Length: 264
Length: 298
Image (cartoon, rainbow over all chains, first blue to last red; front, side, top):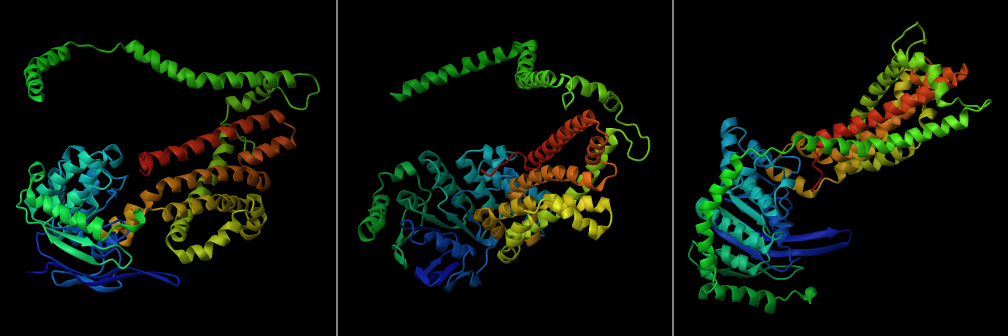
């Protein structure tokens, strides 16, 4: 097993004045190239903090992140993030939002015309080329998230980080986008790490599901392999025994062994 | 149950499409006169009420002031006295005996100069205070005290420093209009959502690119609020400052008219001051709308 992305003994402690809160404890995880891994856990368990550490937006207190055996501790386009609330810049058009990253990442390697073609290629991948001159306020939530995905993909990241990418969308749009992401993963073979709190989403999309215990001091409780063949079809899986068993495992973990106490 | 329904739709689809094409072929132009009528009505709704109010107020003013021995002239007398000034704003008899255009333009030049300086310095300082916690801790208390000093209180000091009316007036405009620009810019910078900073970090923008591509556009609505308050304050300050420094300028024109008891000229000048102030405010507001492209934070 080749470790493409490696989380090595990550601890995270937040300090405010005299009070310290240990958020993450002893996180160890290796992800292979091309793998789709989901991290699931109740809200407040520190899964977003973990993603921020991998993205380099926050630093781990101890331990580190290795990407292709090199430590990474600052943000960069090799770990592009699709943010939960899309985070498109409202004063730029759809095209310009994607172009911002492309101009920066391929400043030396691609010519102007090539960068333009690359932006359009990525907008086409998420079927948003038709809206290239619209501003984020003029398109729907699902479309914004598509553009967010295009922006991240266009940076050709080694690992694509998805931070609850479909959390703010309605159920129908969400299903549609999940299918799109699955198709993209199939086509491009990206390594993807996704934060989610949706059990069905995790089982449907992932090769492995990382289940986190409740915080404080959240740790990895269990890692579940999802042995379902690609390409997966939502409707067929609804009655698939393996799918249901995986789903059952995750549900048991979340609602029996690690119930969210505060939610009760 | 669904299948037959879908089938029916498919069968119907073709004739419906051709029917639509037929409809599109017939030129069915919306009546132009109707559009013009609507436009005229919309304009009338906006223009008529203020006109009615102005007419009414003028009438009341006329009735109150037309009696013999009233201290202020009625509108009819104002018009009669200032007819020459209104009809020929461009005369120049040397010294300060010039048309109103020259007075207004002298005042506007001072404002343009002082305000430009304060916009540049204000945005710069605002960015500094908004971005750096230490700059804020050090400078903010100072700003909060200085901004409460009335514009004219600065004038004697600046006259002492510059020994000349012109730079003193410009300094008064600068020091009056800079505070709202600094404070609003700083608030705008501080309110840049963390998401935008994260995006910039992932894309690895350098500080200069971050300033130009994220910071300024994100804070633009706030900056323009500050600029708009600033232009209003500079126009307030210049009139008062000019009354004291003398020379050509609408402020001194008013003071001069008062000294020669030309009350009608004062009223005319006030009218112009109001209009110019209004236009300046609209100008900055329009510029703000143009620059931010009407994209508020969504």
